[in-house]
Structure formats: structure tokens, C-alpha cells
Image 1 (cartoon, rainbow, N blue to C red):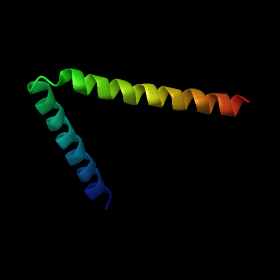
Image 2: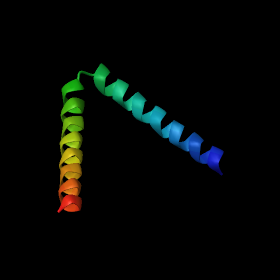
Image 3: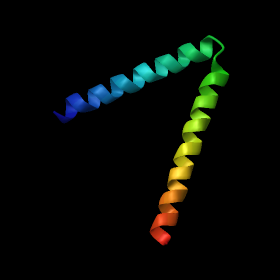
Length: 56
């Protein structure tokens, strides 16, 4: 069960990396960078909110 799960995770990551290579090869690098930057901003806001909530 664990081996099968790890294999699926690896296959998903491999597929994701292939998609990134495809995007970068087609000149959509800036689209990918903008999307990843937005994900980072949202993640950072959630971390800040959690820290604020826990510290009161």
C-alpha cells in the first residue's frame, strides 16, 4: 500500500514537471511565474494570519 502511494506521488510529480517544461518551452514562462507568485503570496498571508491568531 505504501509503495503504491509513493509511486503515484512520483508519477504525479513527474507529470507536473513535464507540464512545466511544456509551458516554459512555449514561452509561457511569465504565466507560470505569475501563477506561482500568487500562490506564494496567498500562502504567506495564511502563515501571517495563523501566527497572528496563535499569538493573540
